[in-house]
Structure formats: structure tokens, C-alpha cells
Length: 443
Image 1: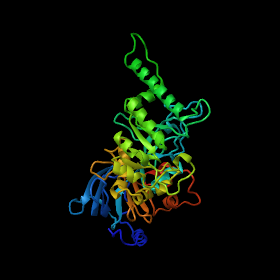
Image 2: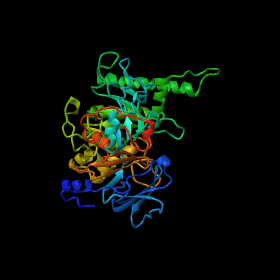
Image 3: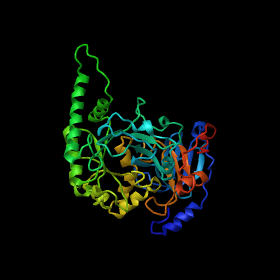
Image 4: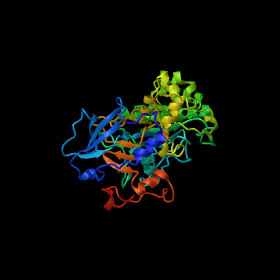
């Protein structure tokens, strides 16, 4: 691995010019043999970086990872020589709007029964842009114009014919996701929406109290009483029972404290999103043991309550003991440029290790997916990216993106390069034909 002190542009150009060996890897459904990626600079995130590393993928899982001297390459493996390129876990975006999905409408400010995956287009070009940015796991959610805009969807960013194929599921086959909430100016409006911050909190509190009463009735029905389905109450109950994490849009420090107050009152799990003024109340957030998913941008504007956003927020929260992840809020940050969030955060005082974790495992844990994704470890999903250089360099390019052992993006393929670079046709929906899906053909 070249020294980070070397000229990053020269390093990136040199690495991009090297051809990858054994590129004709058979699709997983036809593959019984493992793939061995050798001569890689590994960033496992779960441990120290490895200069000459080996990553072995068998089917959809990681079979082995480590130094070349410690990992035996199976004799029947398809060998891919990476020539010193960087391999790190697939990136986890904890807050995205790719896929074109919309949630709640204007009929009410709190709509916990709405499911965003009912409107996600799995051929939406935003998903291909995210692949070009190395994003393999997404928390897709609806907007922040409601106090509660509905249930989010955790998806694997793989080429699929239906959204059902992309959704991450629990051991019972149920789709996994959180609950999107918001406060501040976004969710204020004309009746029935709240006009003030106090009324916003009151409406949320009122609905959670109703949900608590509904749960008691559900759990202890009267004799001969048949419980009727209530989709809104069921969604709120999952939040109160800790089955569904609240992903809460919030910017100002007083709005952050309101979320912490409601969390303490009702006991739900929550991830604070954006937290533009999180640096003002870092100790309070840490004391509440609440993680933060932050957006890191170099040109803030457009929202008065985000005027005190700072590049130093990630570092301040990290030093206070808060778990930090990054998100794109795509289009706010283009998914293709997600890696630069880490570089900007380090520029603002965050540690290199913390920034790499914020791009990967910390976000995975905020989605309850830390046992499956976020690090390069034996037994985890084979979600990883191949980079031309250091992940925190502005000169580095995403060369390949793999999801569950399948290559979903390859910068050397003309159609994939279009998604990475933009231009005529990059905004078109992905095509799909059964004849070409297995070998990663037409998009």
C-alpha cells in the first residue's frame, strides 16, 4: 500500500490503470467454488489494516480474511489479484431517499402505518448511483415533513427485479426497518399539522399514550372480546416495544433535547439524524447513550435551523463518547460521493478510525445489522468495495462494489461508468431482462 504521504492523484491514476486478473467470475447461483481476492490492502474495520491481505468469498458470505501469510487460498478458488488496491466493507447509508419512495401524505402529521417500501422503485437510477459510491446497505425513508412519516426500509443495494429481493429480513422473514420521525420547522404547518414546537411534542406524546393504552387492551383483552387490527397502533407498539428503532430528523439543540426527553418518557430506541447543533449538547447526547447519524457537507445552506452546522460535529461527538455514523440524505450528498463524508469529518477533527467506522459498522449497528454487515469478518455477508486508493482521499475512486458475493458495480464496464460519472442517460431507470441478470448484464 503506498504511503499516504505520496501524491494521492498519482497513486489513484496508477492504480486505476492496473488491470484486475480473473475478472470473469461466474455468478453466485452457478458457483460452487470460492473467490480469493489476493494482494489487497485490507481495511477490515474490525481490526488493523493489512498491507498484503487475502479475502475469500464463498457464496454470499466471507469465508476468510487476513494477512497473506495467515490465510490459505483453496486450490479450487477463482483468484483475483488486486495488485495492492484497497478493500473495505461495503458502506452503510443510514439515511437515504434513493428509490423514489414517498411515505405519509397531507392528511395527518403522524402516520406510523405507512410503509415506504410500498413506493420504492428498485430500478430507480439513485440505487445505481449508490452502487457507484460503494453503498451496499441503505436505510431508505420518507421525508421529514411529518412528525412521523412512517416505516423505513433496510435494503441491500443489489440489482433486483422487485423490492422484495432487496429488503433485509429477520429470522421469520419479516422486512426490517425503523420509524421515521422529525421535529423542528419541517413538520410545522397549517392544521392538522402543528404550528409550534410545543404542539409538535404534544401531538407525539398524545399518540404514544394512546398506543400504550391500546397495547394494554391488546395484551389483556376482555372475555369474548375480539381485538381489531389497528395498523397505526401496531406501528407505534413496535416502537414502544423496541422492535423498531426511531430514526429522528432533528437539527437545533433544543429540538435534540426534546427528542431525548420523549425517549426518556416512553423508553423507545432512537438514532438522532443530522444534529446540526449536536456539538452544543454532545455531553447530554452521550449521557442518554443515544447514537447520532450525521450529515457532513462543505456548503451548508437552505435551512435556517441548520445554520450552525459544523465540520467539527463528528469529532466533538466522538470525543464525548457518542457513536457516530454518516449519511447522505441523498440528494443532499450525492451517494456517489459518500466516502468524502469521512474525509471531511477527519478534516474537522474526527479520528481516522472513527471516520471509517462511521462509514461502515457504526451505521450497521444503528440498523441492528452489525452481526451481518459493516466489517470484513468470517461469516458476515460478502459486502465490500474495491477502491483505487485511500478511502479518505478525494482522489480515490470506487472501482467495484460487491453485495452478498455478487459484483453489482464495475467501473470498467461502460454502463456502470455512466452511473459513476454522470452524463446523458445516467438518469434513466435501470432496465431488467431475465436473460442478462445472472451475469450482471444489461441494466
